[in-house]
Structure formats: structure tokens, C-alpha cells
Length: 367
Ligand code: UT7
Image 1 (cartoon, helix red, strand yellow):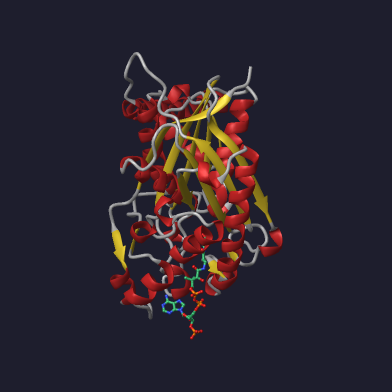
Image 2: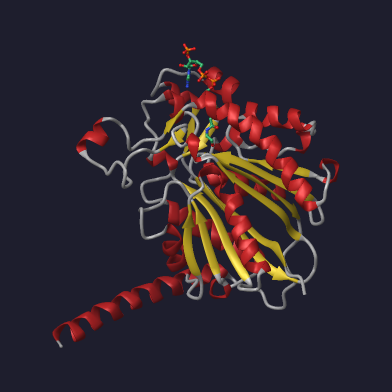
């Protein structure tokens, strides 16, 4: 029997602190007028010192599990898509797994920059369709404010922090993720990158002095690439789903630049009123932008069960992709669960695991 991957839960988490264009104008040579006219961005959220990629991801995940009415222990797979992980390793997904108490889940990070959420959606869908798992949690989470050079006006005006999560569940009922396409072109590796801190340029006094631990971007080239591939990927995903654009009620693109989104909508001849745009309030939250925009579209009643929606994104790598989803709703439930409550148990379990390892070390270490 064919299995389908339905999106049954969603949640978002953004920091409270707002950084306005006006405030940025006092930090670098820019203006509210320039930023709005060239990007559409008015403000972005910036993580507080105690907020991290994993903590935002865990907050979004708990909200998504609450909507799906699923306990963390029912999650089989966690994928965190991020370009601002807590560490090179361990994966931020493992930290999320620990924070929410998803003790059964395998967890890993996925690195495909701003396209990562679509790649994660595809990977979780394939795992469900193959029959190897029942429930997946995919999260796009970023704290890019920690990797931005706040003296570089080309990049610091663009990015913001936040996280968004989906729960995917298996079902025999047709629907859910209908198609997904993924593409990459590594020849564009230098167009959008964080050069140092990896094995090619390990962190050194020299790399820090040269600012190689910050995001570097060729804005114009990325802009040109983005407008081309958004149209291509959207068409390709529609063809794979056997649908036409006029069957699509909503387009949710990666929120990088209002002009990129408008150019793509024009290229597709798709009405801008049916495109979700919220970058004015969050800036570019990279891989988190699509799930955050989705959560807001649902809250505003713009995305309803049975609607067909296209997600389309592009980013560093270079990477790009799109997915077509027949929107469903949370599965019916008999008992209401409160996934948030499991966080306290998760903290206790995590502490006990650490204690067990310490005791084992003491006992076996001596033996
Ligand atoms: O998730 C993917 C992430 N990246 C992107 O999506 C980036 C895509 N690219 C873009 O969004 C746009 O290229 C930018 C918003 C980054 C830049 O807009 P643009 O219209 O392509 O500007 P530009 O780079 O061609 O620069 C035009 C001028 C330059 O001055 P000169 O050389 O003409 O004198 C820049 O130095 O604007 C200047 N400029 C600024 N001026 C005021 C660049 N940044 C700023 C700024 N404020 N923040």
C-alpha cells in the first residue's frame, strides 16, 4: 500500500529582540529607505545571549508537536537544517533531541543553506514513504546574527534569527508532500559562504583578522541566480506532482528579498496576492524562513486543509529546490497530550544520563 507523508504539525520561534533599519543605520552607512527599497526588509529578530540555534529549534519543535498532538517519544527522526549550528559537531539535532526528550529518534543536521528546509522535507518524506519511519520532525533554525560582520553593510542588513518546524506523519490517505526537487551547483561555492572554521581554513588568528569567520556574499550574483532558479524549480516540482500553477492556492518562497520574490512571481505569471511575504518583519532567516512564513500563513487563515501549496527556496552551495504539498490538518486524536511537559522530564533524563556516565566512569575507571 502506498504511504504518504502528511504535515500534521507546525510551529515557529523567534527571539523577542527586534533590530530595526533605523538602528542599523547607526551601525553602518545605510538607511531605512535604502534597505526597504532594495530588499523590502524593515526589521529582523536577533537572538539574546542565552538563545541558540538548538534552543530556538526546540521551542519551534515543541509547538509543532503540540499541534500534531504527538509526544516527543513518538518521534523517529529529527532533521535540523541549519547553517549556524551550535558546533561543527555534535549535530544541533542531537541537542534538540535531548532538550525535547525525543529518546527514540535518530537525529542529524542537514547543511544546504537556505534551501535546507526543502531538502529536509524531502528526506523525511522519503523515509516515511519507504516505510522505515512513522513520524518525523524537521526543523529549520538559524542564529545567523552570530556569523554576520556587523560592519559589512552588504550582509548585516539582510539576516535575522529564528526557527520553524514541521511534524510529518505517515498515512495511507493520499495527500501531504506530493513532490520535491533538489538541485546543487558547487561551482558557485564562493558566491555565498562562511570561509573559515572548517577543515580548509581552520580558525586561526589570521582567519579572524581577515574576517573569514563571517558570512561573505556576492549579492548581485546570488540575486541573478535566485530569480532564475525559483521559476525553474517551481515548474519542475509542479510537473513532478502532475499539477499546474492554477491548481496552487499559495506560494511560500524563501524570504530573502522582496524584489527576488516579485521577479519570480512575474516570471511564473503567478498573482503576488497568493505569495506569502513576511520578510519585512524577520529579514532573511535562511532555512527557517519557509516554515516561519507557513506558520504565519496558517495563523492568518491563508493556508487551509486541501489547499495545494508550493515551497521554493535557494541558497548557498549553491542549492535550490521546491516542493508541492497538499495541505492536510492534524490527525484526529482521542487524548490530548502536552509535549511541553516532556521538556522537564527531558531535562531530568539528560541529567540522569550524565550522572550514569560519571558513575560508570568512576566504577569502571578504577577497575
Ligand atoms: O538566502 C540567500 C541570501 N542572499 C540573498 O538573497 C542576496 C541576494 N541579493 C540581494 O538581495 C541584493 O543583491 C542586495 C540587497 C544584497 C544588494 O542590492 P543590490 O541592488 O544588488 O545592490 P548592489 O550590491 O548592486 O549595490 C548597489 C550599491 C553599491 O554602491 P555603488 O558601488 O553602486 O556605489 C553598494 O555599495 O549599493 C551599495 N550598498 C548599500 N548602500 C546602502 C550595498 N549595501 C548597501 C546598504 N546601504 N546596506
